[in-house]
Image (cartoon, rainbow, N blue to C red; front, side, top):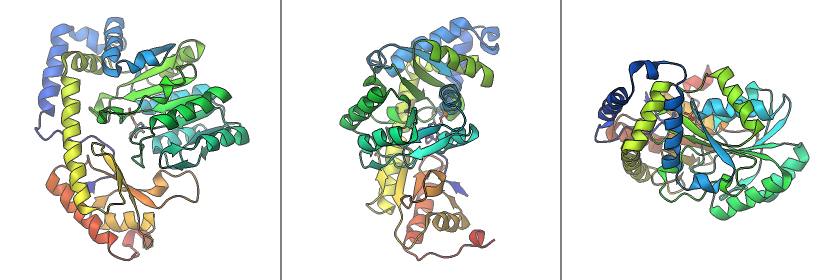
Length: 369
Ligand SMILES: Cc1ncc(COP(=O)(O)O)c(C=O)c1O
């Protein structure tokens, strides 16, 4: 089975990852004694890791205004904690019509109503957002505006400004989840820079540009009581992030490894995206250095049938229904290019996708049982 369903960064082609990890851990243990990195909390390590956020996030941090930076064990948990801190069971929360499944999982676990707001090729429509806020009483919007999961679209700066204007006008909280930003060299400013941080939480995961197993993300949060509540919620669910991994993140950012590893991931993502374009139709939506793409399906295929038929020939992908919050959803599948172990494996899987696209829908065995 080739897994093109998990959105993970590809291993750098130069196979340097093991060396980076070995050298990073060794540097951590040279600078800090084993006791410091093996405890639950270490104030000095924590503040060094937070200091490194200035280097990683750069000038956009200042542009977010009255904010403070926190660190947590990945954005998935932070999304859950934020929803818990800002909503009550039965509340409506807004998002794109196709959205990150982990957001839906967290919202469902908390008994929230998930409402998809209409979007076009530039992302969520500001008028529709305003209408949805008024109609549903929703006070929280979740967006992933850069190389969106799953559509791979990036919201342009002008639309970001218009969305921020609606949020400011209606005093709605934004959870801006931006894990793919660093894969682009020219991403538009975060929406949170236009809201000046007052009602925005900006989530910067390191999973998609470095390693998912770092379980580390920065959260840029408004100062004040809301953030104190969030910190309590982090403590209640995960006790914060691992001191050892936080020290590794800080070391990598400060000594430049994070930047070079990111460059290697981008390079490999670029060459895999080029490979996909040689197999798949022009209708795919993708960023040249993204780690996933969206493939709209031809009319003869329903997404579930397509993914089942593909699984029967050994390729796993993710279909519309994993991302959808409405009944009438665009028909498509998300293909993640990072999971294949080599270009040869990716090519073989893409060949199977290409072949299936040319066929008519068949009832696969997994659909019949
Ligand atoms: C949009 C989005 N947010 C968050 C995550 C999970 O991030 P983390 O590994 O930091 O929990 C993913 C993983 O696929 C994602 O696509």
